Length: 289
Image 1 (cartoon, helix red, strand yellow):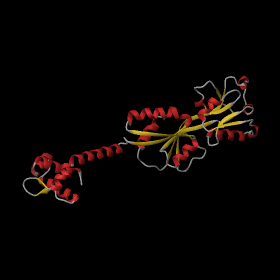
Image 2 (cartoon, one colour):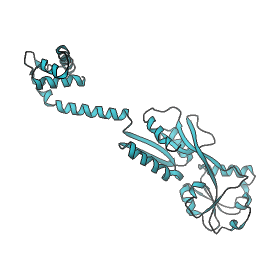
Image 3 (cartoon, helix red, strand yellow):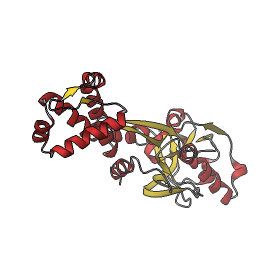
Image 4 (cartoon, rainbow, N blue to C red):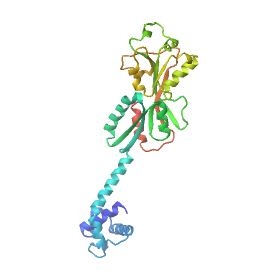
């Protein structure tokens, strides 16, 4: 059954004859007749009592009584199919590091409201390990994240920028009175840091091991949510954080020249993924490049 066959049927009934319907639809009469034959074949019953007048059978009368509803549903279906083809509907699932959630989500939501008003966005927040795992498990379509030391073979990372991480101290911290601060000085104070799945934790522990200072740690406070760490930096505590988390605080941030404390921040995608919403993904990614 095709939409042109239903339209031919409707026009025949309303115009009264096959020939008038052919004129109105700019078809030849054999074409109109063929439409009805094909429609009757699909339906399994006759629509017209054959003769000069287009007189309906009982089945034809019943079909005509529901025809407007059928055509409305057909047009709705065509609209949905068109929206899908143009990527106007659906849900895009995006992973975002917790520490960048606010600024990233705001920009994406503003763009989506303006350009894709019928599309939904689902944000999954977590640390680097969590967003990578969610991508591999296909719980999200792509993610904004820092790069892991060893990327999964199924993922591809594209760098957007460097992200510095270093040490954050409260304004009254004793170390701020020193002209030169060394790593060994920092280790004399309690350290506040993300958990073992946090890439800053791994990078810092790697730096300590490289300098044979792991055993010099005085005390560690581990927090799984890095967003909360700036509020935990009081008295003589020192936090290890990405610089972006310190910008809008009263904390003092610094790096040590002899330590490599940089992270690659960018976008991770699956190397093989479904094509649906791929153009929308690219448009959103362009906002951050």
